[in-house]
Length: 252
Image 1 (cartoon, rainbow, N blue to C red):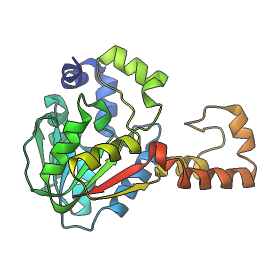
Image 2 (cartoon, one colour; image 1 turned 45 degrees about the horizontal axis):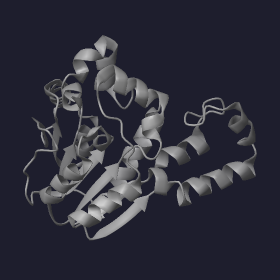
Image 3 (tube, rainbow, N blue to C red; image 1 turned 180 degrees about the vertical axis):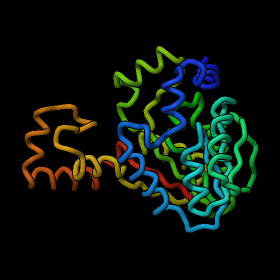
Image 4 (spheres, rainbow, N blue to C red; image 1 turned 90 degrees about the vertical axis):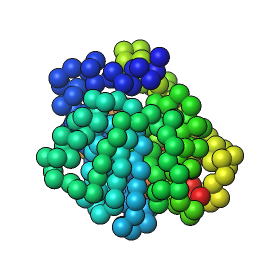
């Protein structure tokens, strides 16, 4: 069962895996992309003070960043081990405006309590993503926003996703914006916007020429040295790629 896989994930990843999970985003090979993305989330969110629910927070790095920005944050995760490490880091950093709870986000009952709800790389692990988004809707106050930043089209067929599903028994789903908007409209959200995923622009503009993380191709490395082609690719990523991999905002 995938929920058991999520609950027991920490127990299976070993000492190095636990260290990686605790030290995110700095432990990640795409640390720059993750930091760019959380910065974009800050830019999209209404300014603090606001109350935020961070859904599927894992070891809590996004929750800690949000709390340090000045938001009142509650982070939830189905895994007791994840929440244990999240609390350890919270106490180490002496963050007072942050609380963590062990909860399955497909079975929560918050009602009109939050100004913002965030799914950051967590919804694609769900069994029932529509139910999770419905719960997010119920948790929001009128006018509140739900922000969803997830792997888009094609994620489930990548080698990394397939290996993780087989090894740990968790879900690795595609969560393209058009699917999320479809759910949001049915649930009752009123306003929608799709933002480009900044990590693609970050990679195109700033990654080392020998380290195109999402392309893994010598051919692309060569042609992207041509300024016109690189600029066109950045424009394409901003204007069109967001419909496959974008950050989705839905307002209640």
